[in-house]
Length: 83
Image 1: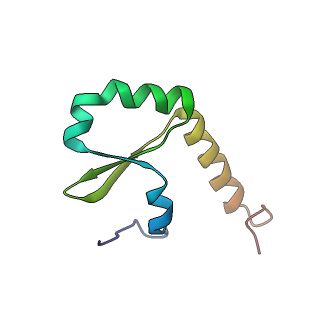
Image 2: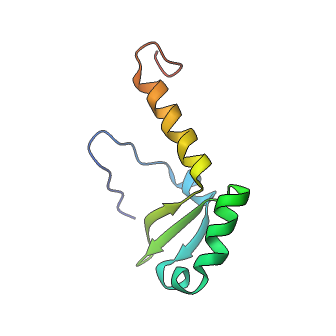
């Protein structure tokens, strides 16, 4: 599998992606509501695949905000990610 990332972004390893619930783009069209509600209410995370390749991740807003906060802390030279 080819892994591409924006400049400065590290792609997660395969184990991290395997922890997500996988769904194809085709299936997503059929079961969107059944995916969005667990993502929002139960913090479920979904990896959407297109042509058997990772395409996008669906996660709830609380998860997203936590990730943004963690990334912001790590960008600070004195944050918990500084070495």
